[in-house]
Image 1 (cartoon, rainbow, N blue to C red):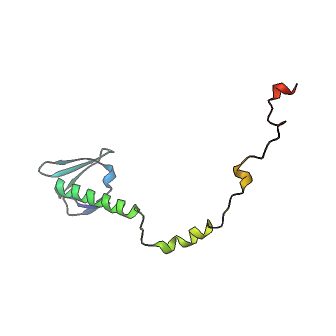
Image 2: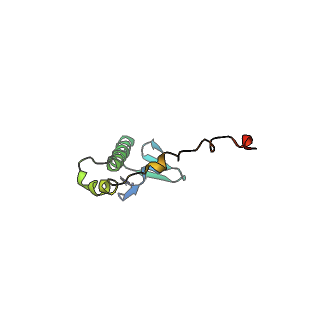
Image 3: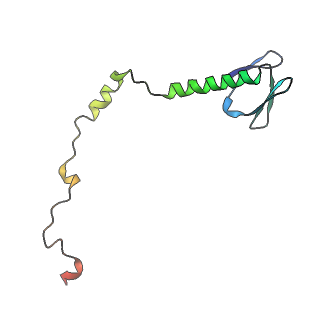
Length: 106
């Protein structure tokens, strides 16, 4: 959410994903996708810089951190001793009788 100031000096918080357009007439008018219009004190350049800063914070928070290796120790230990049997990988050996096609068994 980004903080904006209405014309009556009230602070409001707006989700930047809902912004459809920003018009800078003598007053800055923000139009949302649902058709609502808000008149704010801030200029369009300031609003755009706040939207960019908001999205960069979101992306930065979703990125994985590489410095906390101790958190992965327990997870790695869960999968350390798993082994797959050879029977699950290779099919059982077939006799010569099992390899003949069914139509020649008549």
